[in-house]
Image 1 (cartoon, rainbow, N blue to C red):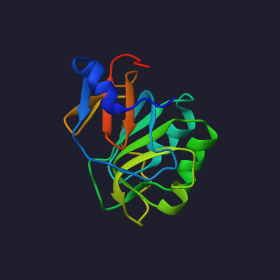
Image 2: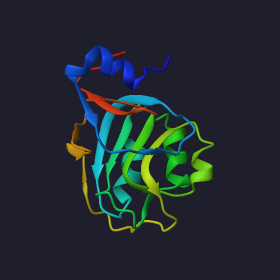
Image 3: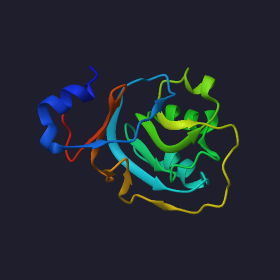
Image 4: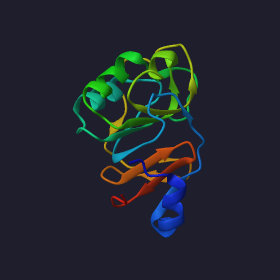
Length: 159
């Protein structure tokens, strides 16, 4: 059963942080939720790949890419890692590529947009730290719920 973010807002508004950043959905899953894991990078996806290879099954990777629209932080190859590891989804404050392929995968993928240029490979950034996107703080270990209405964060599991 999928939980709707609008219903969560109706029932738990005082417990939620609501992300004000509008995202586009690129994955085959249009709604997803899970425990938050984070990376903070800028136009470099080495830590994104590492996180996708290591975070626990069912988690949602939240990538603070600084809002850059100059390089894609994930494409079909990294998304395939997430699918094989049964991650719930990826939320990227930045761009993705290979969008036709992403749309066929059993993975939730939210991003600002698409851009065909791949990322740099320098390994710079931070992981498992709180990140703020759209005036909402995404803390590792908290829960995120995402669907066509938006993205909300809770300190505890609400379903």
